[in-house]
Length: 236
Image (cartoon, rainbow, N blue to C red; front, side, top):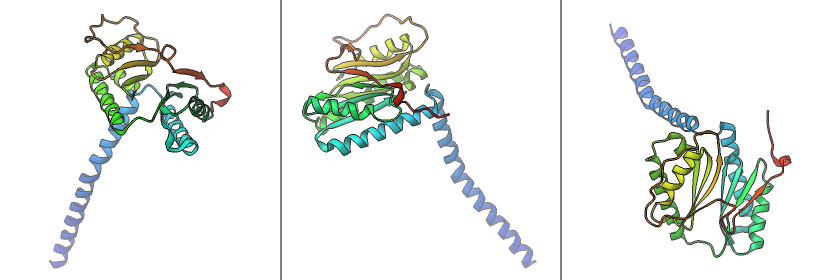
């Protein structure tokens, strides 16, 4: 009788332990998988391209930091191997040097150099830029368009908002009008790659005195530099 009771007790305890482990682990695994899957599924870039973009950002940032140190403030953003350089540098020579560093990073397809030649921005200015980026993201969610909110990146520097990604003409118009009406946005620079889709857009009703809109070619001090095909590494 004692043996049978102790055996039964062991079975109950083991079962309880497994149930506890499963209840703790399963939601974590499922939740993480669902979140990552959703992000990948709504991003038009392939998983390989997303990893390439992350690698470009890390390598370029590391090389710039090692070469120029703290006397420059440079942010690197890559989308489908098109690299946006923002921030501040003290001289034109430093601006060109940063661009050359980025051009030499493996897999980079083109470079948009939007560096400002001026003192580094303050922490309060950077905090305000982060706040503006958050407001832009929140505003764009209201568009109720999953592609529009996941097919691009938002970068803010000194109140200037850069929008980059793969969008249709219609989405580009939506994103631009929504962004330029946000309080605190000084200018909107579109670094879009337009993909096939509806070119029609509804008539815009922006707020009073909205921020101006430019393309990189029209924005003062911003240059686009194509990268030779030999610098792009492809893997089968």
